[in-house]
Amino acid sequence: MFKIKILNNISATGLKELPKNNYDVSADINDPDAILVRSAKMHDMKINDNLKAVGRAGAGVNNIPIDKMNEKGVVVFNSPGANANAVKELVISSILLSSRNICQAWNHVNNLPLDNLKNEVELSKKNYIGSELPGKTLGIIGLGAIGVQIANSAHNLGMNVIGFDPGITINNAWQLNAGVKKSSNLNQLLKKSDFVSFHVPLVEATKNLLNKENICLLPKGATVLNFARYGIIDEEALIKALDNKDIKYYITDFPVDKIKNHNRVIALPHLGASTIEAENNCAVMVARQIKDYLENGNIVNSVNFPEVIMPRNGKQRIIIAHKNIPNMVGQISTAIANAKININDLLNKSKNEIAYSLIDLESKIPNEVINNLRKIKGVLNLTIV
Image (tube, rainbow, N blue to C red; front, side, top):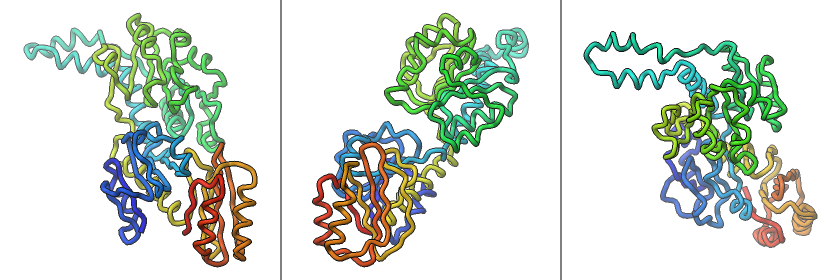
């Protein structure tokens, strides 16, 4: 029976993918085969030797110590695209909120005295005149599953849409509406954007992607939207631009103390993926990935391991995570051959410093040979299924 530890409340719909006859799923497990997590911080956790996989019910993995997982050969899964519709709807609604000054107008009405409210509203509505979206330009930085959906929806609303993503996948490029223009230069995109929305992971290359050097390129009165991660925007520079009325609004899903109550900031409490549907979709996707990995060794949507899928073709399968160094496959296959066991099928792939092998055997392998395989220098994790 596989033991699964959960660190957050994971959707019951997702957990149904892990049947009780083969999976023990609980928050109280001490020596798990796999961990399911949403936002819990894992950097200070002790990683047990039995751990084989971590499943993040969401896209970002900043809360997971990837380097530590690599050292132990632990596969880290996420669920890209499962929450894309939820984030898309929130971004589009935020663009509408800002273009029509809805939050500020709503706050104004709520603070009016109750006597003669009708006349006060008519007198003050001119202060909240907005604008319509058709013809306005939306710049999207990051054309992953979320960015593509936002681009297509904004285009359907009549907006001009420009996307920037040097690493866009072929699959995502195919899904883009033909009317979405691509920019090969971030600064050129900023110069043309009435609205600019960020959808990139927080890595060294994306820290302060919008900063004091390039924020001045945005047209006066532009709106900045951050539904990606805190740290992608230099908020000191942004506050200065807001105070100078160079930027009309900053809409963020990652509020911090210094922007709270700023009259040009619309701050939300990390609502991007907070829908029942998105939580279910993420949990189902990651639970299925964990299940297929533990039972068959197949890897889909891993952030640190290559994608590896191989149909079963033998009486036993060896799953080996190892360092991406020469002669690993040779040593492994030699140890199996010396035990006079035939290999029916073998698949080896690598990603950066990590390599991964699936080996289907004609007959069951003795424990002594398994122990010898584990002793090969460079083997990080070995499982028999």
